[in-house]
Length: 427
Ligand code: GAL
Image (cartoon, rainbow, N blue to C red):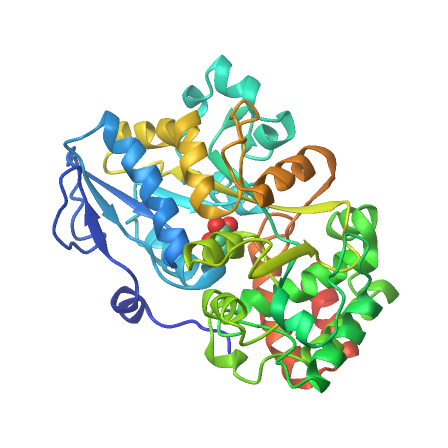
């Protein structure tokens, strides 16, 4: 496995570039299409390119086009799960003074990198009294700077979910796991699956974030939510005993990973789980959207439980849209964010995405059983911010963590791994 940092032209060629209008449209390249002062185009930038991600993005675009039917929406999405490629492209464009009008990010440290650089337009006017009262105060705080709001969050994904193929577990005589599933039992079950001739652990290691997510979830199991907050808040070190124990457990789990992991993206690994090619996958619940999009049935083909040892904690990965301070089309960018804040779009977006609406006044009873229990968990569990998705630590730390995870997946050297993390946290 290798960190993927292709050059900008390669990414444009590899990225998904579509143009959508109310009545269809022709292909157009991002950047080249939105000339300054052009009121008829709006570029929306994201890394939503898998089947379920594209469908969810379309609900945002469709919701927006209801109020702005004449505008041509340029979909500047760049493929690569977790946004590894997209964020590299975005940095290049921001440095070159060519921002998309609107882009995808996360709260916390992720959005702060843009607010501190004065790269975002103030979105406070989207926060009407109705919107503000419907979004939990901590979530509003997480997209605010200097008392102003700079992003609109569409939904909360849960990062710490363990998915499984029911038939494969039954075939290997593995009991379906419950909310109190422990790391030791999980490791024993992985061994049982292997003995039964089943590929135990699905992994889309072509996306660096997927292996990092396995570690993140295992780290949360080792630390608990309070320990997590101390670690990410700088109160304890990244070379502590519990981090080491989590690294050692992750190394054990990786021994059971799909031998084809390096050639697969997260969504391919998830589809492999659905089709019976591998048994377990530790992955955020965008996997739910992808499983359902592929026709897999909750409770029939697949089941889920919190990642072992993390029941009662909810790793929040909150999809958030922001608009550029120097957007080519600021008026339409604001209308797009208003659409994202609407109840209709929040419901439609999350239905496809597998996440839950951030607005607490959205009726979720039409969403799936998985999403309804996730909404309860989001309301009642200990919420922690994700490192892997850029919320809890700086982008520099997250990148260093990805590089360290990539090396660790090869070397399994616990001491070198935690040392690299500790160094990154201090720099
Ligand atoms: C996360 C994002 C999700 C999903 C996932 C996989 O960072 O919040 O919406 O897209 O990456 O690509």
